[in-house]
Length: 171
Image (tube, rainbow, N blue to C red; front, side, top):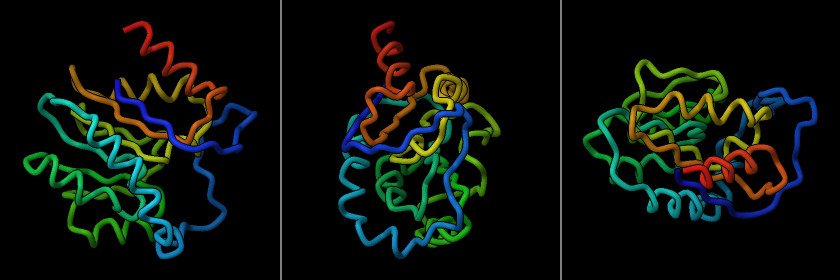
């Protein structure tokens, strides 16, 4: 398991529902204003990923594709899939040319065509609730020996972090 945490945030769902928070579509240009700050933990996480089995590399919650070029350099011979719910962000991600496929989907419910080698998610899963069921569901999308590489802003009391810590300690 690869897990990285960075900064604190106060957002938390109390109803246990898994969903993406968005009242309007994301604005890629506004989001990109702090791209260098947001990219640092993403690249740190990418550097921690070891060998992978056969299969696709998925950027779950790819946004505007800011990590796409780094994924392409690291995994040039893999099919790279970007998944996000924002059409505007996916248009930017597709324009990078780093992904072989971009998919508009709710990242909580998206299912791959086949098990994946890497499920990479940088600063996206904290927007979802029901981590106690989401994290095991994501793990089931992996090929045997696959890697879930997830970075979320630090929410240590959140169920997601308790579950990850329990999983790490059990393995």
